[in-house]
Image (cartoon, rainbow, N blue to C red; front, side):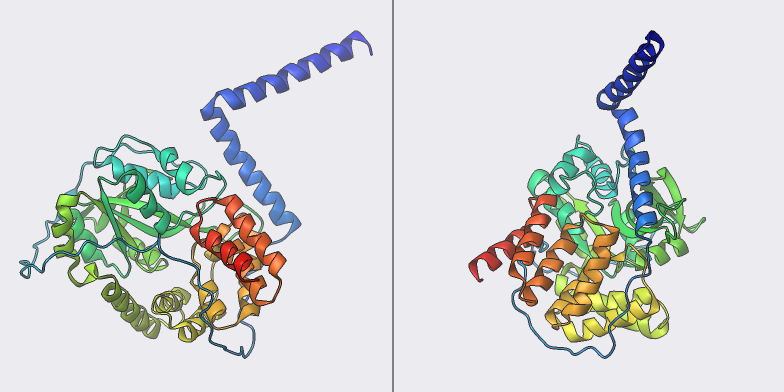
Length: 412
């Protein structure tokens, strides 16, 4: 090898080494390149395995009712604090505008809007951590693309126990304003659209947590602390209503223990979880009747029916949503159809949607869990065990996967 080639090789080695050293020593540089690498990897996957629309229901499905086994939900239930009844509060006259002190804004890491939004929310009460304190517990794998509301609640209850957290569904704009006017920021889950595709034929749709800290009647908008777009952004009432609907109008409240009574008074009947779910079910029923071509109204109907274990009706509601068409990433974030099809014995439909979910999100612990239950129903015990273990590899704290694995190992 001549001297010129040796010098070129040495220069190349130093260049690669320098890039590598900067990557591992400079977190800002690392973050920029990780985003780019993630997008390149997902795009290549989409080229090799083109994205198709989510599968529609199988024709004339036979429904067989079965409720066993069922994953434990012990760590996922809202921890209620029941207080003596109070007098009916005086109706609140809402101010025309509210702007709560905005906590220090934090840009989310990859797939980390939940921990980032919750970090800002906790910071409102003087917490001093950041999104990585939260994600280390609830999504130990950095490329985990979804954090459920139950996981956010789990963090608060176990690592910020000096605060309370509650979440409900079926919210409305007036309730958001009442909470904000009383001094409580509100965290909601809503639809989100990427500016550019991650793969060919990307519908750009995803889920997002958004922290609201105010509103203004003059501009008909809320003030949001958006971990993706920026701080103190305005979002119109109509836009928020539309994007919020997709997630059953879910809202999350963090507050101090001495504020429980105030929260309870504002929520009124919605403080009671079953009552809140029944009202959300009634709302979804009325919306699906008023807008029968809106797939999300039917999906919400199914989700609220699942809560009451009305699985046959839920499965039919999900069928209608699937016929109308759902976003490509829907099963990354919402798992009611998995329960409905499992508990009605529609294992082929369950397998179809979990396999689709895993094509879009190969490391989804929820989809791995339910593919395991599908394999269990098919008598494929080793495949089921492998799926449950894979789910635990993605998230070692995933209680439902540990329950499933223990169940199958102890009931071969």
